[in-house]
Length: 132
Image 1 (spheres, rainbow, N blue to C red):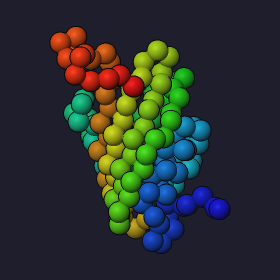
Image 2 (cartoon, one colour):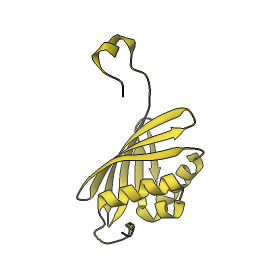
Image 3 (cartoon, one colour):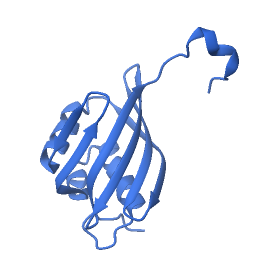
Image 4 (cartoon, rainbow, N blue to C red):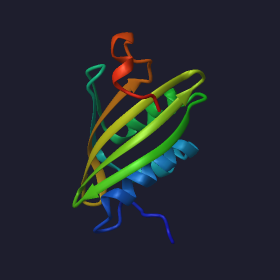
């Protein structure tokens, strides 16, 4: 089955977001660039950063790639929107990403990606939940 191209008319949002994260995992920056709109706007609420433009988004991710390992979890899509759960491992640190994406003309035009570090639960509630 051919990989979706972001510029394909009627591109499936879930397939495009899956291809985006697969491109990030493989460090295929040309693929990532093809999947995002020129006027892309990405927000990272935890650091209050807004990334404007496809080239800035690709440059930032290329710069931060380092030794990270990307594991795409679940992708859910409806119409022009998709959500993804991603696990990013960098050395000993584990980041969990919840990303919400909106496509325009088959390309990712808007995204909100929230990152959280994996951590141990507070001791006072350890008896209320199980670890996985």
